[in-house]
Image 1 (cartoon, rainbow, N blue to C red):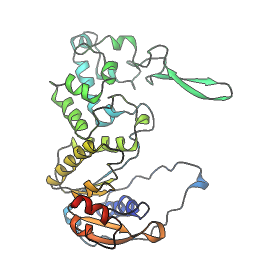
Image 2: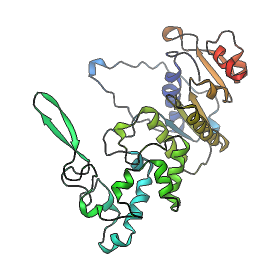
Image 3: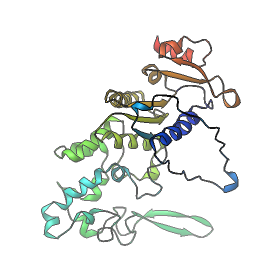
Image 4: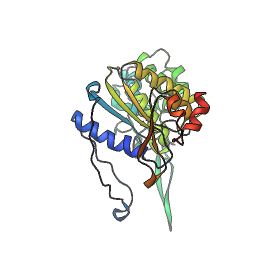
Length: 317
């Protein structure tokens, strides 16, 4: 789905299409929490719509958006993807942990028995200042490790649980090379261009694009059964061209597995690699919202009515 900014791409795909497909499948769309004061919120008027055909090949809907994977520092890459469950199992299975009767819960910073008592597993404490907003400083007891001293004494291959959370995805991939269950999650995260992130990097430090790719990686870990509709809104925003290539490889894999992927996109390389392009416009706001042209990338690139066409033509050749 292409078109100038404000032409209605996201409204059509991420809102209207999602609601109509979900209704057909009998899924409930969770209500989104709106930020800001009540008087500032805009009233959304729905104009209705229907799906004419094509649902016979869709059994499941997955919306991969750029909303945060969590609103607090307790949510992070490792917990969201589920790989932290397997890491904690490895620590609980060590000889030292079994000797002390430490179970898997001991290595969670959300459980009282394993976390630092001072910061309650947050890794930092709030410092109140007179006449100024509160600031956060590293916990004076655990120094940001999140765990109590007894828990940190347990090591897996020479590293404690806090040190593992401090690793990047790339470093962890080498460290857990002999652990297939952990390696699968790490490999997918690397394949979508997230090798530089720390396993314990809080959700509050992630960009919208990073959150979106973490969600995509979490979905890619699952066994592909086909007949799923994936909807992504500008997933390449801010990505290096090399990472765009990695992302496209993953999306192509989803399609080859019998799934359908719909993208709202501005990157012409991605548009050119698509099977079908729908250009919305011709302008923004009141001048948008109409299908200007639809067809293969070559057909859209040849359109005289589309503002996208000249840019797409440069890539299509």
